[in-house]
Length: 537
Image 1 (cartoon, rainbow, N blue to C red):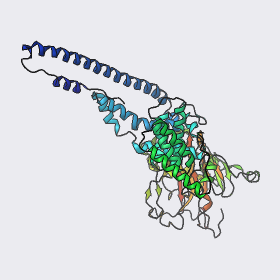
Image 2 (image 1 turned 90 degrees about the vertical axis):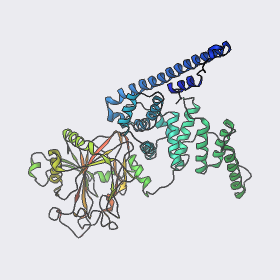
Image 3 (image 1 turned 90 degrees about the horizontal axis):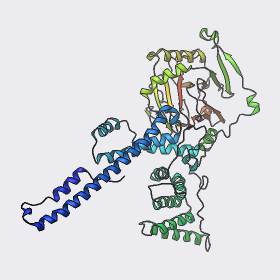
Image 4 (image 1 turned 180 degrees about the horizontal axis):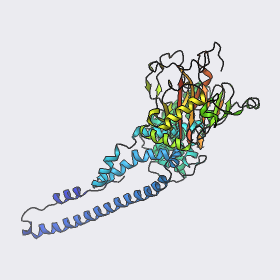
């Protein structure tokens, strides 16, 4: 933002121009003061003009934010369901409000500054903005969305309009670049360039975009295109401190490669825009990445006609449990082996709202249990916030725990507390096991209740797009449906882990996903689910 002179600087001008004593005795000296006064008047006019300009800038910002907040506060969760809105909220509060604060500080406003001071502790920081940007990239990868779709807000089921400007796209690309993620840096710098060429407004220079883009393309191994982009950069800014050197280096490297291949020359790269799929995304730590992401998109689901014929729906009374006799649960088979079932109307809307009310003040970054130490810690592959609720806290929690026990026939006395999780922008939990494996025998040692024998997962919201629970091993995808719950066993009757139950929570593309988990442990189930010698469901 522009810098404006303060009253202090004007006062300094006055001080510097103060006249010495006895000047009145010399008309010559006094005529000098006439010109001094004229300069002061001009300076005063410039100050007034600068203040008016600053005020206009603040008014424009206030009017824009007034319209935006009127829309966002009508349906906060729905507004934030759009990942672009969530990212821009992070960016606004972390970057743009700080710029406005700097503008106002040039002529201090006590009321504004005091409010900023009070609320700053709740503002997202740089890590939040970076995390939101990376979430958009994660959604882009998982659901195979090009940067144009995100920039134009073209996401399925969206009712709120949200676009990314040239500068937004540039910042996305720069975030990726700073993480040495050249694949995404290319995609977003290319999008910034595309919108720039379409003559959209921007602050960042085309030279800066080409600088990042050309080097990122080089890092992706595309030397001809890197050379072409660098030539464009040199044409725009011949004095650029890196462009000339980079161009000579790229050309020399390409020449060396062609000589090694016994080729005399190569056709120069065209200036065709880089598209999704131009470059292959680098492999990462997750072996089943492609299968997992395909399932999230609804691809590769192995629900055959034969398998479907083995799935049934029924009324379930919990082996004639008194609390379920008059109103049995509606049970539907989601998968045959391993057996996964869904219960309809497992939670009422009133219960869901109460659980969310209790959980919201305690939501904190979700953790995972370290397989070596058994200690809970955060991880990049689990992006959500969670809270743990005890049955004694509220009758609703006690009632939900009792219902889980009635439905499953398993005791919840040794189960973990009810965990409430909320997945925000791009929220996910990559493929994982709920039970502890042989290589991590101490994972639940501190609990003293054995391994996690079963999982009971309540869906507390509908999700417009994404957010499925998928099982990469056997190709199942289970979609969230508010008020329903799914249940499966993690262990065979022999006590051995069922490795087929490795599952994942797909990134939420559109919407806000709320779930509650109840992990039921082995201890206390000896007569409720007797052990067996074979690995059968």
